[in-house]
Length: 236
Image 1 (tube, one colour):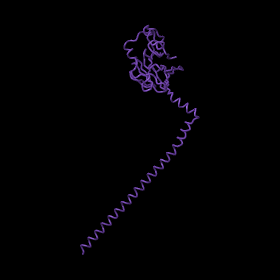
Image 2 (cartoon, one colour; image 1 turned 135 degrees about the vertical axis):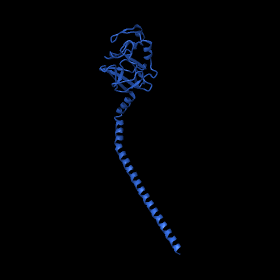
Image 3 (spheres, helix red, strand yellow; image 1 turned 90 degrees about the horizontal axis):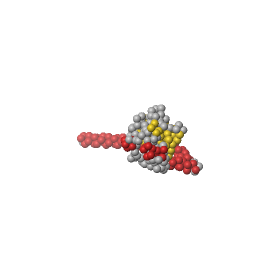
Image 4 (cartoon, helix red, strand yellow; image 1 turned 180 degrees about the vertical axis):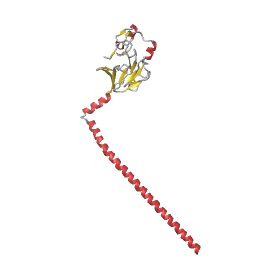
């Protein structure tokens, strides 16, 4: 396959790094430098995976589970004795990136300033910056002809809910269908209400206009009456 969990990961990575064991992908290994150790140390935002989240990486028919309940992050790269997940790809760096569970419940990739970059769905991610992975994301290390790794993330709570609804004989689906059937009726009632409101507003405006016309007419009549009274007084 294109990637495996290394022996170094299984034994805590100590013994393999000290020996500088050889790798079938990149030749004889050597101890990581202090800078590499610092860069690939545990990210401050990493945490143990949530119990309801299950993640996998799949490439060329091979699937690797990322669900160790006691592991916050995984180092990924082509140096088998320096990483937790061995990426069998010549364009990957020895310690290329970190795959880690985030405090917000998501799964993130963190590029360790690799030479050829880390790509999600063909877009290069910025180095030394955590980038969230979405279900179905295509992860690639290095050049365009490198193998891709499909990320799958499942929320077990959603699966449990769907299973419960299925055990109830589709009761939940029936409720949803009933709600969907109510939507057109609600929309029609809203349109009728809006139409009534507009009609009521038009009637009120018409009534207001008639009242104003009547008031103006009365005002003009009173004004003419006063004018006639003053004319009679002058003539008398």
